[in-house]
Image 1: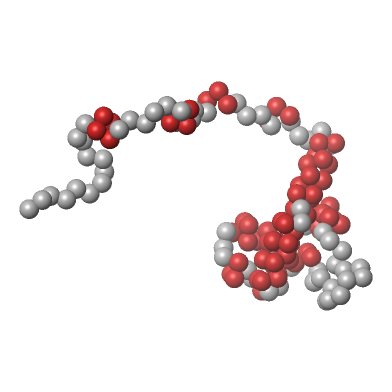
Image 2: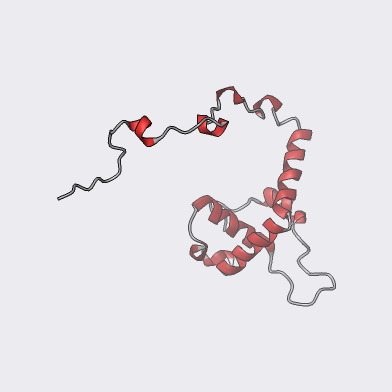
Amino acid sequence: MHYRFDLTDAQWLRIRDSFPDRYHHGKAGRPFKDHRPLVNGILWHLHTGAPWPDTPARYGPWQTVYDRFNRWRKDGTWAQILDALLLRLDKGGHIERDLWCFDATNCRAHTAAAGAEKKSRAAAGAGRPTGHAFHRAG
């Protein structure tokens, strides 16, 4: 059964070889579980924003989904997949380079960020309330 955030067969075929070998060639321990349900669980989590423990059981134990997400983040697997997909899009002429720019002419930093002196409270507010609670004497 295909769920809303699951990868299609075509999508999975594009990225499946980017994940570490599931049989640990020569390493001790159990072989990895099938990556596809775990990847789908990660995508479900990222799409919904739900807490990891709420990951549906169809994707496997939530701890495994979480651990695999973190492992692949730390070892650069996600970055390699993104790079490969962007390269594929670029070679196919599907990336418009003029959309990849940032116009900084409209980005302003606060004057204090540029080294300007900060105004004292007395000069800035001249006795006006600043939004803090005031306590009256007596």
